[in-house]
Amino acid sequence: MIPLLERVGRFTSRYFVVWVLAGSALALYTPGTFTPIADYIAPLLGIVMLGMGLTLSPGDFRRILERPRDVFVGATAQWVCMPLFAYLLVVGLGIPWEIGVGLILLGAAPGGTASNVMTYLGRGDVALSVTITSVTTLAAPLVMPAWVVVLAGEEITVTFAEMAREIVLIVLIPVVAGVVLRVLLDRYAPTAAKAGLSIFPAISVIVIVAIVAAVVGLNAGDVLGASVVVVLAVVVHNALGLGAGYGVGRLTKMSEERARACAFEVGLQNSGLAVALAVAFFDPIAALIPALFSVWHNVTGPALATVFVRRDGEPIAEYESAAVSD
Image (cartoon, rainbow, N blue to C red; front, side, top):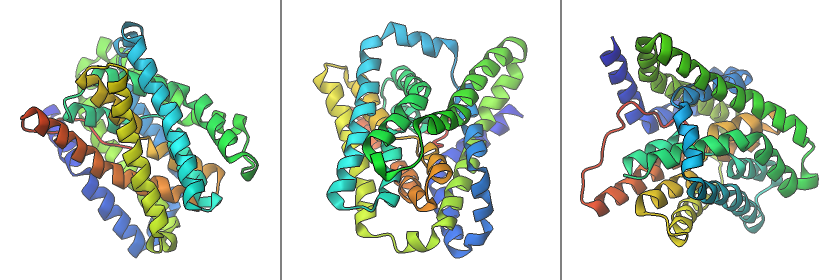
């Protein structure tokens, strides 16, 4: 049974971009089919974060103490670079605030499982990647609302406390629950633990595709008429993040493997969380940029991983059972 679950996980993960594009196309063709899902975006994302927690272990958090400098550099680069890049793009490109706040949410979001998978594919330091993702995710209830309040200011009505509470419910509690569940399963039901880790990538992919389809359905007209400026903002924001992450890594004397991890951690955001918060606190149009990003970063991530691996002169690995779920 477990080999079958692993094959299902590999298959769904390998063609994640295909499923996202197919779901988005269906949502554009028949928006009403997917818009009801919008009411459940937050709990659905909680399921994904529970799955992320299942992939972690106490040892992942102990690595924070083992490599504090590189973790601090990577997390700080993400916390500072991406929100500021987002703000500069919103202002510089003249993006309306009701749409631009989605880019700021995206910039302030933590890393996600996509960064861990791409680090693995690109022969980066996976342990460092997982640790930075853990740190930025656990800090999200403070970092995200702080940046949104600071950068959007009077343009928003949501308070720091409201957003922090929502992130705790969507991210922190499910991740912690996943870690605890993983420890209990490893100790008392290892077979069940392995089965869960095998099938959760498929579940994560299905959930994220459903979330993206719901957002596209809600904004079908806007997606079809998405301006060049909005698409440009997504592309440039992602490129700046990947470049800044790698550049910061090298400038701070990280090894090549750790600099690659830093590139993916800074450049690939948890777009699902940004979508959930946009729908929960702002106009649904605010979820447009995070939804577009969820597709785009699953194009640039594998592309950069391939560049790294070809530089090493090796064939790129398959996903194994990991999911690019955000």
